Length: 116
Image (cartoon, rainbow, N blue to C red; front, side):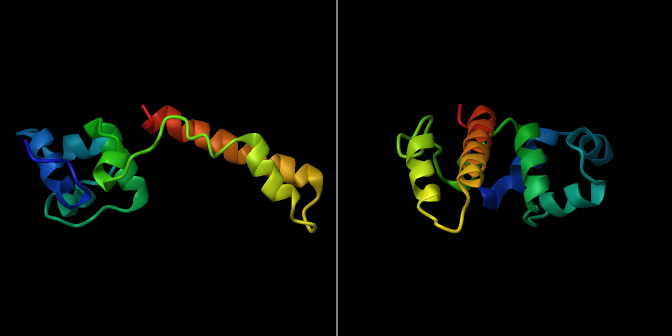
């Protein structure tokens, strides 16, 4: 089997679609048939479409992009991030805390969806 990459996402989609109709599959993915056609003929998808395709193909986006997401990188913690944000004298402490919390929540959501 060919390695999954962003450059061959159209081939992967076409292969997974098999003999099913383009409209049916596009509806299942949540994109237009025209978008599906463009992707199958080699055009690269936008970020939202890329996300939908990865979900439909059941492929980790990191795999298609050729990168690896570590499960729990030690460098990103509330204390290490908070130190950097609190160092900004123009940022109120409650704003630094809120930003830290948002970043950590976003990171967890990404890991939950793609880091496994």
